[in-house]
Length: 311
Image (cartoon, rainbow, N blue to C red; front, side):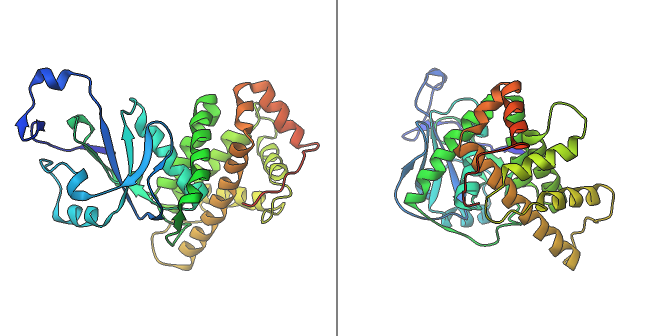
């Protein structure tokens, strides 16, 4: 959920801007402070429009902004980095979600955004609801990101942008991953991440759907360290137990809750490994054509050239 924030009339050098000036096309810069980012490096360009830049509360947050509490200001004052969108397109919010996803997958970072600030356009002032914050269930500690590691994040982000446009299957898969990462409840996150696997590996016909899906994922991950043949079966058994009430949802600090979080961590790692392989080897391009996609996935059932990568 996104909440619009009230602002005073736009000004330039302390003067109210006329409607004629407001209507002119001008450079627009949206600043999104990153919370929980531990980064050692310099400004980094992810794409033509998006960059990681130093954040300064007094400089980057318009002082005429109304609606910030003392707690908001205290938190914002502690942050040092922000994603900056220069002249972003209409769909930039979804693209920023993919950039945050790339940081999570490739840099194991739990960083998130809560605000969008824009000095040039009051319509881009907004506070992002808590449903957009990562659940922080599977990754419990901050990870220091070096500048050299952001090159991998950038490559993954650019591939995610392309993958998101290839087909409805790939688009939905990434949506499910995002919803899983943003879910505040472990059972919600688990179901969404399983849906992402189904979007990527299920067949086009209902016959033996679950059996085929499990075998495809097993073969796809074959040879990758840390993923045994029975792990996918266990994931689907847990999903079934959740749906049929054999694994209860609980918010209490109990052994069951700890086990549920542990199960989610294993699933998240498996999903990330699949996504990384699909991105890095550009397998997602096959999803543009249903026949090519099915030909590839069916070939996994027979023989697949195993390429060893680290999860």
